[in-house]
Amino acid sequence: MRRTPARRQRGAMAVEFGVSAFLFLMALLGAMEVGRLLWTWNAAAEATRLGARLAAVCGRNDSDIKTRMIERLPALKKSQISLAYTNPGDVAACNDVNCRFVRVELQGHTHALLVPLPSGGISIKLPTFSTTLPREVFNSANNPACSS
Image 1 (spheres, rainbow, N blue to C red):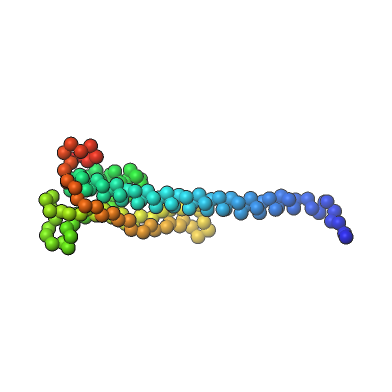
Image 2 (cartoon, rainbow, N blue to C red):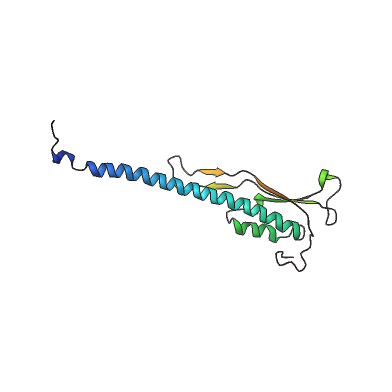
């Protein structure tokens, strides 16, 4: 068997390390981006639940509801959040006395990736998140969770 001189093997280990380190770092960055995406997904769902809970007990269209939702996910815009007060079957116009349900929807939010890719900045559009709860009091008086 013929042996290759050690001189010809010089640098092979560095090349192998470079290739494996590159693959490891790409996998690590990919895992971090997936983690960020899942955190954003969870924060959007939690913000929607918080908004529905606040809308069920605070005054109708309380200005603090959207602000508190944005505290959960700072990348949100108020235009992406919608509040709806409804009756079953939409029988009558909804007011403070006869409203039965509160629905909060978050739509149109996109998650921007931090890792630059050759195709440019990629954003992932999140699905619509919505939560519907029964109305409780619609009274902000003496309620520390509400602003008015």
